[in-house]
Image 1 (cartoon, rainbow, N blue to C red):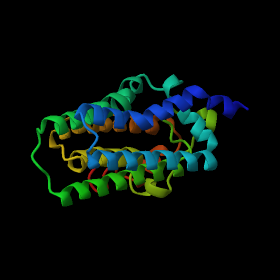
Image 2 (tube, helix red, strand yellow):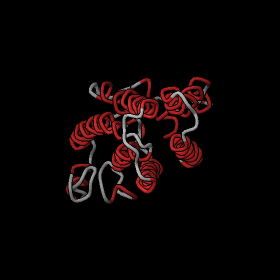
Image 3 (cartoon, one colour):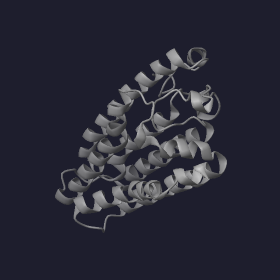
Image 4 (cartoon, one colour):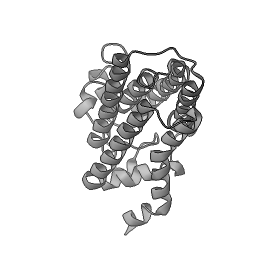
Length: 232
């Protein structure tokens, strides 16, 4: 009963907004709908979002409930109340807006089809890594907090064997590839700003986990890199 209440109409409405807003911004900003790259990006994004949520509801409904409460920010770190909207809402909105305006006004030079397809391949890989991390980590909350109410423990399996924050790594890869996939090179500017905010959030979250989550400091010594294996 409690789980059903947590997934009321507000959550459903928010989920629909997450699905439809990128398409709306892309096509409205572009002033056209005959843009196959944008359609492909929307299909990929919707497929991963819907597919991962279906699996999550079946495999780990308590995590689905936890993530559904992200807007409440309950027990979230104060700095995350600032960084979360930047990395998850305002930054992506700016990326989609600039990409659409680029399509409308032709700011960027033409990009070879092979480069665009390579960009889509990287996006799919990034989304896959993020989805893998979500399904492996039952504490993959949308906000940074130590989930003592859910028995928070360190996760070391799946992509967490390679980097400590694979969800952020996958998302950053996807955003850096979007300018190539959409043929909108000027979008690299807002995309880099989003990734910079993600890097800051990663560092602060990692510091929090090492200080407050038992066993995480030992895990960090074994898995040395936060986002990029062999680099950082």
